[in-house]
Figure 1 (spheres, one colour):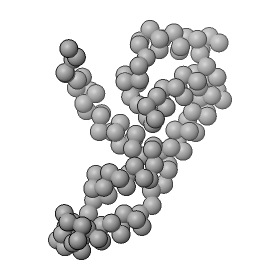
Figure 2 (cartoon, helix red, strand yellow; figure 1 turned 180 degrees about the vertical axis):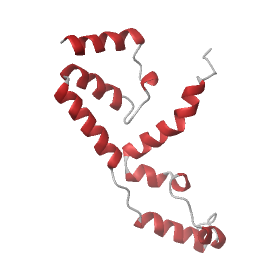
Figure 3 (cartoon, rainbow, N blue to C red; figure 1 turned 90 degrees about the vertical axis):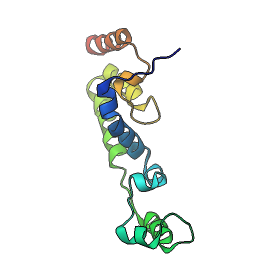
Figure 4 (cartoon, rainbow, N blue to C red; figure 1 turned 135 degrees about the vertical axis):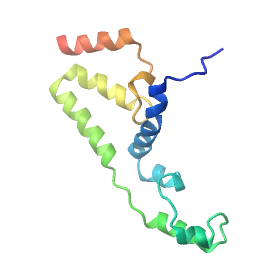
Length: 128
């Protein structure tokens, strides 16, 4: 039997981690989330967005095709990983594993490392 409760801090930041993970994965994932990240205008809703034959849905689909999403989050993560590798070789490998653990960004408490392993890898990185 598993544990059904979640830490309140985890629950508080979970939407942010989900958004970071989606934006790290790129434009296609953001666009596939539909209304979550690309809200419809009032006119689209008024023209009907629920049915694929309605004008509002067609306009929303056209807007989604035209929309461009920059890969700023991915670029920032890759730059951070590169900087960590450059400055602290061991720490860079640790961060690389940590940030890419779940094909994107994962909260440190949800990547499969125990506290002992994190502490040990951090000591190894700082002591060489």
